[in-house]
Image 1 (cartoon, rainbow over the protein chains, first blue to last red):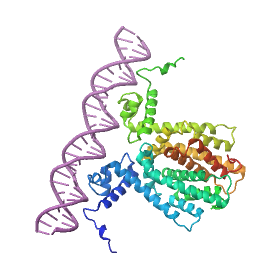
Image 2 (spheres, each protein chain N blue to C red; image 1 turned 90 degrees about the vertical axis):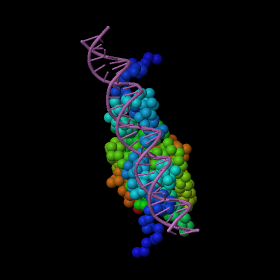
Image 3 (cartoon, protein in one colour; image 1 turned 30 degrees about the vertical axis):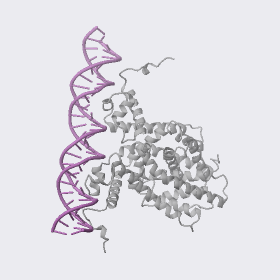
Image 4 (tube, chains in turn red, green, brown, blue; image 1 turned 135 degrees about the vertical axis):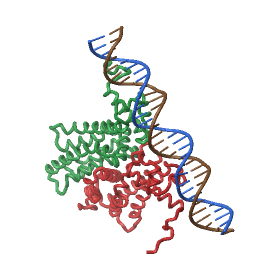
Amino acid sequence: MPRIKNQKTTRTASPEVRKNQLIDATIICIAKHGISGTTLHDVTRQAGLSMGLVNFHFKSKDALFEETLMSLAQEHRALWMRALEREELSAADKLRAMVDAQFHPRICNRRKLAVWFAFFGEAAHRKSYRASSSRFDIERQELSAELCRLIIADGEYRGVDARGVSQTLEALFDGFWLNMLMYPTDFRREDMAQRVLAYLGAVFPDHFDGQ
Amino acid sequence: MPRIKNQKTTRTASPEVRKNQLIDATIICIAKHGISGTTLHDVTRQAGLSMGLVNFHFKSKDALFEETLMSLAQEHRALWMRALEREELSAADKLRAMVDAQFHPRICNRRKLAVWFAFFGEAAHRKSYRASSSRFDIERQELSAELCRLIIADGEYRGVDARGVSQTLEALFDGFWLNMLMYPTDFRREDMAQRVLAYLGAVFPDHFDGQ
DNA sequence: CGCCTCATTGAATAGTCATTCAATCAATGA
DNA sequence: TCATTGATTGAATGACTATTCAATGAGGCG
């Protein structure tokens, strides 16, 4: 197998490589020890680098944490965005794809969920964390409400509120995530997408039939 | 107005009074500064007491935090338990009462929600936090599943899974809580109970009619 | 009134940790 | 080869904080 040149282990590397390396290490450390228990010593050891590097590549520990959250949020967004850009899909199929994305193993696993909720726990009193996640959350909320509107029009559903359904969806996503993190044996990843689809089936029976 | 004797401000007070005072102060501080940002100096100042008192009344800062979480969990449990103990209520009414309890202003307010999620954020890596909340969560999960079973039998609903509905309910509770904390203007407390009832109406139309 | 018990105080202690920085080292181009 | 640039190291610094404890004070009881 031919190696890509950049992957050779050199002592020095480009800032971008190092930043990603530190962000990855931060995710592992926060998942293991939480935000309050994660020290720069832990992070740099996990990354196999020396202490001073964080403050060389990032303005501060806080900045590292912010970029870590941002990186999670971007990864998440990229996943659900891909489905929505496929013009050939119906509104219902796009919504189905959003559900799948939400429970995709790349973002919906123990480690990442632990980090998400570690940040949510701090978000209440840290504007910057709230800002990072809210930007994409609002965007997704609007897109899913729009999809619901299309489905309601298409199925001529009476007494169903698009905004209500999309907010309920959002709550289901977050709530299942939390319970998967806390009670992984009761809330298994493979079942959760089905649970959400069952909800959609109850609200939009013509578009999401049972099972 | 006659004062109750114990409320007189004396320099010394019973350990129980002091512990509650410190727990209340802890809730305020965690809501304001998060778990990592809450120091014993903050807590004791908030409580109007001196630094050394925490380690006199509690084994450690950690123990104070654990008892704070426990106190939140107990308060929560007391609220939904009260409804379930009223034998004259139907299963559907009991479920309705659980929904109301979940969004009761005494527990469902910005301050308390911030503290709940601060603890959830740490729960991933702290067994003691997980244990505190899981004990009651599991109890409630089983009770709500039992209520769903009764409703399904009573309404002869086909293709509805009691466990699935109760897990979905749990996710809705947690998910709406999180979104109320993060986006209070979009997710207003008064509407959230309605959203949950709308879900129940979609699943059990004969027991929870629209509105 | 004293005495005793126990809550309370806050300064001292010991430990942790983010951040800084002078020195070192690798790579690149002249 | 040498010089320059920029990444890397890790010990030193300084700030912060949980915990301890000796001294103090209040309340209750004989």
